Image 1 (cartoon, rainbow, N blue to C red):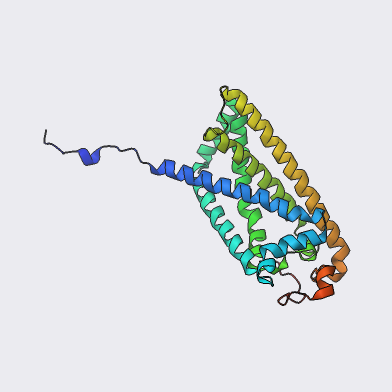
Image 2 (tube, helix red, strand yellow; image 1 turned 180 degrees about the vertical axis):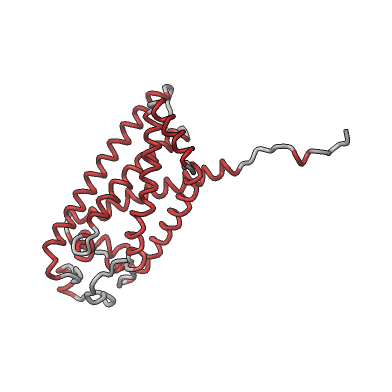
Length: 263
C-alpha cells in the first residue's frame, strides 16, 4: 500500500452540527430571555399609564439625551429580527421535511407516549406559527417605533384590530419559549442532580409554573390595553403625555398626533 493513498476519502466527523446546535441554543436562549423582559416592560401599563410612558421613553433615550429617539427601538427590533431569522433557520433543520417523515414522527410519538416528545411537537408547531404571528408585530415596531405608549399601543391593540393577533401570539410565544428553555436545560445538563429523572420532573414543573405566570401576566396586560383602547377610541391617534411633562415642557421631538399605520 502506498502511504497516504485514500486518506482524503476517510470519513471525518464534522464539528458543524455541534456548532449549529450551540448557535441554535444560544439564539433561542437570548430570544426567550428577551421575551420575558419584554413582557415585564409592556406590563408596566398595569401599574399606570405614566409608568408605561416612562419605560417607553427610557428605551428611546429620553432620560439620557433630553429628547426621545425612537430609532433606538428600531435598532433593537432589527437585532431581535436577526436573532429570530437565525434561530428559525437552524431550527428548521430538525423539522420533518415531507409527509413520510411527518407520519413517521407522528407514529413514533403515539407509540412512545413520552411527554418530552409531545412537548417537542408543540414546540415545532408553535415555532411554525410564530413565523406568521410575530411578523406583523415586529414590522410595526421596526418601522413605527414612535407608536409605542399608553395611548398609542392601546389604539393599535383595539382600534387597529391587533388584539386577535396578540392573543394568538401570546399563546404561541409563551408555550414555545417555555418548552424551549426546558429542553435547553435538559439537553445541556443544566441543574442536573444525582437523580436525572427527578431533576427533569422538577424542571418540567417549573416550566409550567413560568408558562402559566407569563400567560396570566400577558392576558392581564392585553386586557388593560384593550380597556384603554376602548376608552380612547374617540381620540384615536392622540399621543399620551404625562401631566408632569405637560406642566413643564413637552419633549422637543415629541411627534404630532398621527393615525397608526397597519402593515
